[in-house]
Length: 370
Image (cartoon, rainbow, N blue to C red):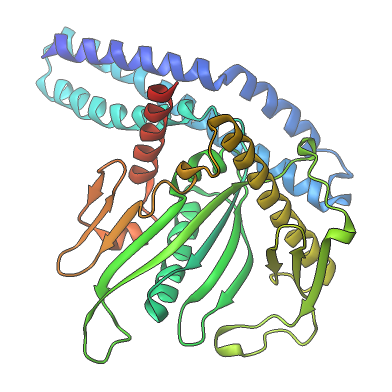
């Protein structure tokens, strides 16, 4: 048993060294030093957008360094504890080593997934759009459940989010919602969530208690950066303003501050109503429009390379995940075959295992088609 533990420690140490190399912990420490200097500047908050960007990146870098250092410390401690247990013949300490190695293996495996995010836009922040599909009021309710699921996931990780737009359905739920996850690698992480999600349950909106199948679509886009050169001439946009509204059409704003932008050449429509200022809403809507146009450009370029008219892989298939609440309880990813019998936990934001399985599945597909 002692030899097995020593072998496990050696293997985990090798994996950890590879992760530290790929994530470049020395670069992260340099970034931290630079960001701390920027954060300490007395005029930092003169530009609120820049200040929020600096503090957000500093928080992320601190989190990454802390996670790497904690795991490295635990590995070193486990090695010392194993040596002591061997020297003293302490069965209790040996059992403690075994428990810690199991926990470490899981934590290191989760961190290793980050090393698989090497796509062109994977390091970007993410814009996530959710739309109710077929299924009437149940689909709208499902869309709202998915919005809460992703926001809870971000909250669990301490990732800042901003909801740009929510379009409420008449009876219950949402027609659509758009929000941002403002942390590096949010796009690479969440992009595997793109596709059609399916819910099967006894409808709470059906007086006869019949089973209902409903659908919702999830779209994940990388946030546009200045280097992307997505310029949109004013003449190609129609900007409409309207009053923000909440559930049931009740006004939640007494001014026409919500903004809707229509991109005339493509027909893409985006809106934002989370700010009281019309200018702020217009700026946010413009960022969403730029992200959609960047994704459209990326898909067109990929289609040309593949000799296809559309990128079929962009939606990860018609149905990528099923959430079944009746006649049994199960959430299953149809691409990776990963599943769990605890839908309640999933809808409360516990989706890391699905995301990790999706990232590994995508990487394997890329290797197979390379």
